[in-house]
Image 1: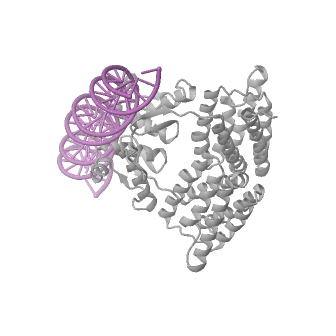
Image 2: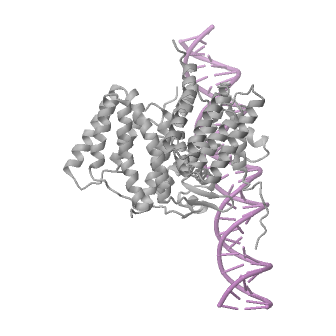
Image 3: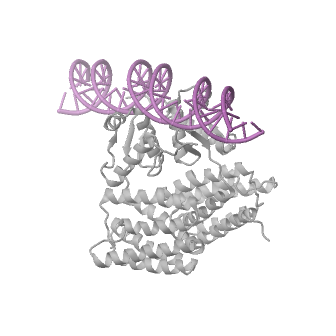
Length: 227
Length: 227
DNA sequence: TCGAGCAAAATTGTAGACAAAATGAAAGAG
DNA sequence: CTCTTTCATTTTGTCTACAATTTTGCTCGA
């Protein structure tokens, strides 16, 4: 019997995957700026690897639309406009309403209590230090993440948590969009939480819809300011 | 000034992309069966290329979840269960309702007339040869494709047409799920079309919802037959 | 001054070879 | 007979080298 050498913390190793994750992270953090050239040789020498793994990593990122790729020319960091962000939010709204409805129906007891605990933590956290823009903070995403998980629909979860959220984070970092909606968002979470814990699917969806609609509306104002 | 040599029909060339498309097509057609091993060397020799492009192609397909990938082991054709298909349909329903609503608001005049023409073609086509299961036929997808396009939301379009529809086709081929809902689906299209051409967003969404709900319901029966 | 055209440099695309890991089969112990 | 261990084979991971394409800068001429 083989000792499992990687007890935890990882690893599938495979440099191309590690590279893809690192580059993805740097794009999200904004350390790699939109439009910036991603030279294979430069990346290869930076990470002390050959170009093979780099190419594979870039292909993966291209498939996920984190980089724009032109054959025989190369890869560049994809630049996402505010219009893109609006489109993302439109899709997100639709899918999270579904997620909230499904979560209200299907969440297990432990999931519900965990979600409630999560909310209480956020509440106490932001009642002490009150200058925080809760909206789109890591904690905000945690809440939505938990609901996506609770929907018990892996496809839905993947689209939301692995496609849309990262993309939204990229948008945010590329536009310094830190539109903090104060503790308003936190209050809205309370209603969503209540509906989910009571298993009221329709209501959970409705609260989620309003929650995200207000976020989207403020974004729309940013694009075309009201007359 | 350079002559553009590839006047049309393509090409970005780049073997890894060509390979990815071919393999994807074969998975959709069911020529590559679920769970089947995708050996790099085998594919490389089959297409008379080196392993490099093959690896890149497989990485792309893995990112799109058409193949399951295990480091140091290799890639296998992803097998999609009927439960997966149900999850896909749930997400699809939510997104297509949004697409129909947006299409009703934003479709241009020429897009509307084109959609109408498309519908009339399907109508005459299936009134002559009436044995066809319209539902999930290429023509059925054409209609939904046009609406996704008309939503004027590239993110939405991409998820529907490049992620969900292909995946649904894979499911169908892997399960011989040719559940033809007769010309019922065609009739439902008529209502959707009417609502869109009249710009009635809410109604278009509602008809779309019912249209896909009935499809999903019949799928649910397949999984857990009614008592 | 500006643009076309050519040439050199840099970058991407592909191929082939080597290293590392996993798979599978055979041999041996209980 | 079954389970375990070992070893050879196969397959994947990575690297280096070479071919093809693009980019860049220069020269030349109007």
